[in-house]
Image 1 (tube, rainbow, N blue to C red):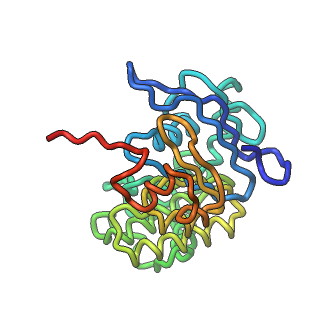
Image 2 (cartoon, helix red, strand yellow):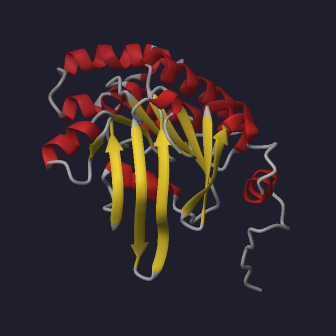
Image 3 (cartoon, one colour):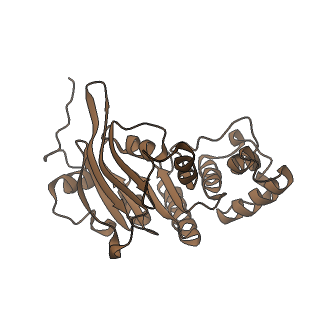
Length: 261
């Protein structure tokens, strides 16, 4: 799965393996994501989608394999170099992961403030500008996350993800907990933000409508490996048995669910 147009992949994963005790989660993942491309990874619960994301982010150490960002293997690079490369990744967590004790503006600029890249006065101005990009007005900057609806919390989390203008963005189940209309709104905002920044994106999701709205390319994880990869627009039409069963929610097929009775 080489990057498109022969360019060096923005993210390149080869032979990535990770087990927890006797449970093998990733069993030799190979995946390329070309620059300025949005890749969506689908798969059932427990198939390793989040583990893949966390390995690239450096939150989990894989057992073996290779992870390159712009051609540099972050698993073998000096710690400072690996941290510099990973610092270019903006992350939208599944449940927002906002800090309850901080107002919205501090949440949005948390990373910039933590790294002393911005003053507190400038952070309030920056937060107002970034929140406007996700459709929120200046009246929300002093509110706490608890005072926001689920959709507003997701927008604030997206604003935080783009505040440092990252050239790589990760999205972990971006529409979870949202109604279909708000899910579509968030997806449109994600696509708009990614395009404006010229970023490369990696999203994991169970939502097929979301996957097709966000993704240029798509891949399916099954039994620790990439079982299929292709255009996101083909997710619902491909004849690949695993993908067809998963995307259409069919009980019968090669994917067998073990039910306890």
